[in-house]
Figure 1 (cartoon, rainbow, N blue to C red):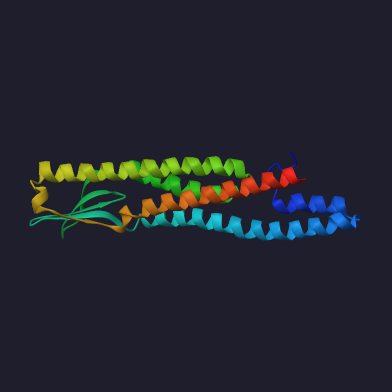
Figure 2: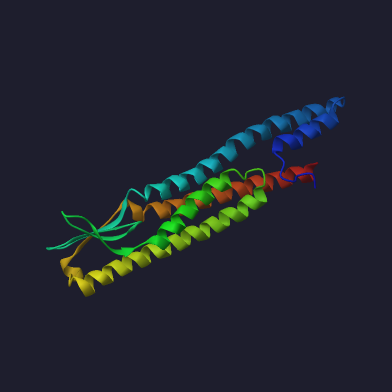
Length: 203
């Protein structure tokens, strides 16, 4: 199989070079080359944008809250860094979210790394699938952190659920958006790979 991590452009440049001097085949290959050059530049760029959006969404989690809890006496904040009791004298960390933070950093780095693997689409598909698992793991850890925070409020501060108002932050939505973007990126990469395989069969 000629396609081994090479770009679509290289594939059809070779095909055109073979056809030089053959007027009937040259024009046909030139049209294929032009169409697929546009396909490669546009579609791959869209896939890269999806992966970049994952990195952006997860980066925003460093600056946004997952949830805030407010009662008559206390206020609390759940973020990527941990669960804090808010006060004018300074915030007190009650639970750390180091595991959540590590998974988040891995997702950001992995998404950026996948963008630069566009020349090997089969590997890119596998990496995107693994990134999906990281996103799922992050969401599970996120809700586990939320559950721990609620339990701590009930057991330590005697703030009953009926007495505590909970406001979910944008941080709860961002991982779900990352999951959607990851799905779109994977679907685009697979379509691109299928198109390349189809081109090989035509040859």
